[in-house]
Image 1 (cartoon, rainbow, N blue to C red):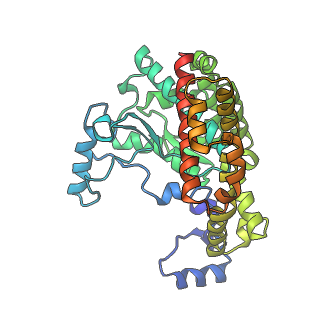
Image 2: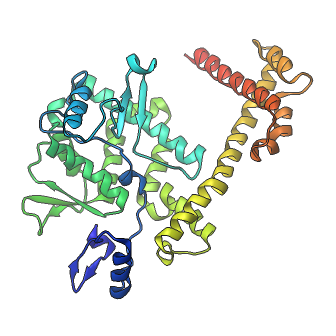
Image 3: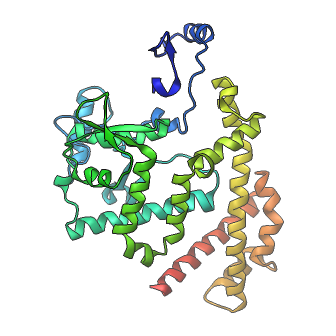
Length: 369
């Protein structure tokens, strides 16, 4: 991190001392500009719990999370009443009343239909591939050890990428056999001159290797789930990160909002205020507009079903908005929604129609199956 941020005084890397006034004084004297982090939330927020020597975060046994939380509570580090924070975790049906997966490895998207849409599709594909690995016996628990060291070895790749560090180091004889398989397909690796017994890996090349493995191992799943466009999109984001990634898109819009072209031209406080202002105004509004565009298509579909007298659509639309169509009603209240000034009566009607689109999606999926 110090190398990337170029925080050196007379050739020696330094870290902030603590008191802001002292850090600012040193920064001015030695022209230390600092650094720009792509996704600060992923390193500042509690994203993932570390294993202890006694309890692993992911040891493959039911209830292993309770043992880890108790261990961390004994150390005074964690409240066991809090949920088990992991980059990707399963929802416990016994606690939530439903099952499913929660991803905590992304934070914010510049748009919903492309960025978030492809991210959700990719998450589904990788979950299906993980089940395929397990059920086929291709990947076993022994191939991905749950010791704190091997766990840190694989997690450092993720957190290093969030900070923007271009390389990471892996033990040449790592016990993580799945990681070794990925590295075998990664280009431009070499033995580290700085860390004996470690291999130096470029993060960008590692990501390309991951895409190659997904294409090879999940070829049938990609075809079955219609994921080819998602894989093309992923490849573009990886190979042209500075232009096509979600963080690059967000950064460009924040800089435009702030009236500058380089984040390093602004003090950290000013850039962060501009980011928050952009999120609360322009990004919020563009997300709402994007959602309304999707709802417009869905409401037109409802009107079509109502015209064909399919199921309950005509009855529900008429009882909700009387002599209007669903799409006409949406057009009438769009400005109220964008200004967050919609009446409680119209809001209730709007929610009813949204629930009707959910019902339509469920029926469509049932028919497809």
